[in-house]
Amino acid sequence: MIREAMARAYPGRSTVLICGVANIQEELPRLKELLIDEPNYMANRSPVTSPDAHIMWSYTVGWAARLARARMGVKEDIEKCIELVKTAEKDSFNIVVVHLLKDIAYIRQPEAIDYLRQYLNSDRRLAPTNPGNIGEPVANYVMNFIAESLDNYPIERREVRNYSEQEIELCRKWMSKQTEWKIIR
Image 1 (spheres, rainbow, N blue to C red):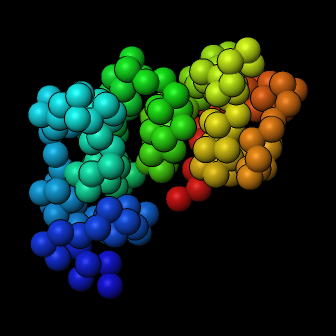
Image 2: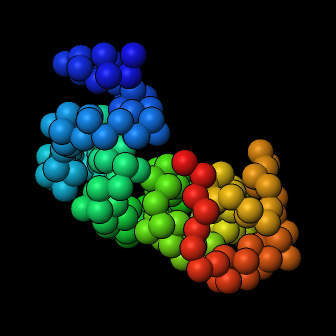
């Protein structure tokens, strides 16, 4: 069914992502056909008509294809995904944390886990939603993404991201001791 859906002229974003999870290596050429040039895509979007033009590429089938290829272990796509997210962070840190880091977690490759670990180890916070409050720790988001990705992670994923400083520190220490990731595929 996945292969039939991938053969369509315009496979949907979900189909492409499922193909990556199913690790259908024979679809790598088709996924390559679907790739876009993300910087060129951004350059052709108007910030006036599209205020979030700097990340619009992340909603495309082309981005889903790049993520699927990365999940299947294509090194150049793993590197490109991480590079694009790093670039997007300069324009909108909150969107990267809330939206794009979940995409990085989807990749389920060691490089992606290492990249997420940088955010876990950071003391950065999201911009507050209410003036006068402090923003949510970035580690709260990353904890969930990593918990879904790694076997034996010391904290279970929660629907409500309310991890204590002690739990965050426990996970930081645990990750620093790992020599190899046991990634849940």
